[in-house]
Every structure is written in C-alpha cells, then in structure tokens.
Length: 242
Ligand SMILES: Cc1cc2nc3c(=O)[nH]c(=O)nc-3n(C[C@H](O)[C@H](O)[C@H](O)COP(=O)(O)O)c2cc1C
Image (cartoon, rainbow, N blue to C red; front, side, top):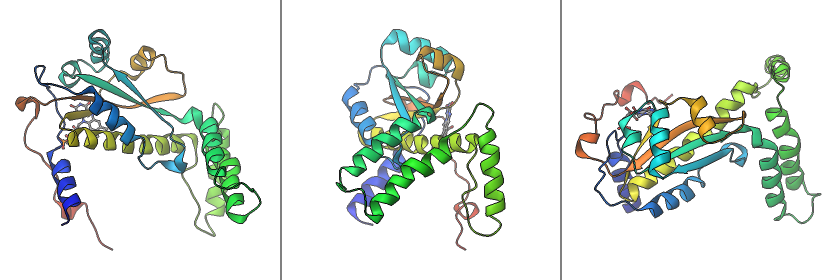
C-alpha cells in the first residue's frame, strides 16, 4: 500500500457516525468551509451539480432544526448542521452553465466533439429531465425504452422518479466526500435521514422542486457518542467477482 492509500485507509476506518458531540472541544468552522469546497468536486451525473448545501450555525437556528431532526442528539449537540439538498428543478440553468463553460474550450462549434457536447446538453439532458406534473412524458419514455431496448442496450431509468434517484445518488456522493474530508480535518460527522422533510424545507424556504437528501451533523465526537462497535456483513456476502 502506498502512503496516500495508508492515510486514506486510516480516514475511512476512523470515520464513525457520531450521536453525541463534545461541546467543550475546539472546533474549526473553516474545516467545514474547506470540506464543502471539496464536496463540490465529487463526481456527479452529467456534471449538472444539482445540489445545494445549507450551513446552520447559530444556536437558535440549530435548536430549531434539531427539533425537525426528531430531537436526535446528533443534531442537538452538533457544532453545525449541514442540510444537503437536491435541486433537480435547476437542471436547465445548470445544463446551460456547464455547456457554456465547456464551449470556452471550443471556440468553433462545428467539430464532431463539440457537436456531441452540444447535443448532449441541448437534446439528451432535456429529454431525460423534462417532466410534467403527472409524468406522462416519463410513461412515454419508458414505453419507448422498453420497445427500443428489446433490440439493443438502452437506458431504462428515465421517469421523473428515476431522475430523482439519479440526483440523490450524486448528492449523496458529495455528502460522503464532505464527511471523509471532515474526518481528515480531525472532526466527526453523522449523516441523518431521520427528519421531517416538510418542516426542514419550510425552515430553509425551499421551493417545491427541492428535496432534502440528508442532514449532516458535525463536531468533535464524545467517546460515548459512538454507539457500539462497527458492524459490517461479511465481505464475501457483498463483494463478488463474476
Ligand atoms: C442516508 C443515511 C441516513 C442515516 N440516517 C441516520 C439518522 O437519521 N440517525 C442516525 O443516528 N444515524 C443515521 N445514519 C447513520 C447510520 O446509522 C450509520 O452510518 C451506520 O449505522 C453505520 O455506522 P458507521 O457510520 O459508524 O460506520 C444514516 C446513514 C446514512 C448513510
């Protein structure tokens, strides 16, 4: 194992979900800033970056949000709470941004590679992300993919619900980058899905199209903040070679 892998191994093994944080331990808010900036470098579907991160730091706001996290101690004792939000509804503006940035590398728009990029963001992305209130478009896309897929490999996850999953997948990867980075900075975290999403959305004044992916608490762990030894199913049950 090389040096980088050794350090990474230590960080991954040291990260645990923390349910009680030490109120007295020093905390570096800049570590959160750096970790969020690293999270933004996470891989994500079509590079649309359909995520947002809301830092909740004041005692008053944290206390309110902790209530919406069903009173979990991981939330009520945290130094900060980071609400990680999906923004599938922003697909159009993000696609335009990413395409505009990509095109800066290609002053002419006539080459094959340029055409592929333009087609991707102007045709394929709208086809995937466009949806109507009852997802008639999704039903039609599903029908086309089922028929077309009888003859060749074809993407099948294309309904509005499928695309929600796509966006949550990418956003969860950013959450993981954030948590590992916090560990590397010497701090602890806990991802939480135990919350009242409607109240959290109201709390942040988020629009209908936004969804809460998870809320991550951060701080310095108290020894008793780790609930039990780490349990994982045997690797033979989940890692396969075919
Ligand atoms: C998406 C997600 C949601 C979770 N929600 C909660 C939660 O609401 N409360 C909690 O105490 N732990 C929560 N956890 C933490 C898991 O219980 C924890 O990761 C698991 O037990 C493994 O322990 P470890 O993280 O210490 O390795 C969540 C983890 C994930 C990935």
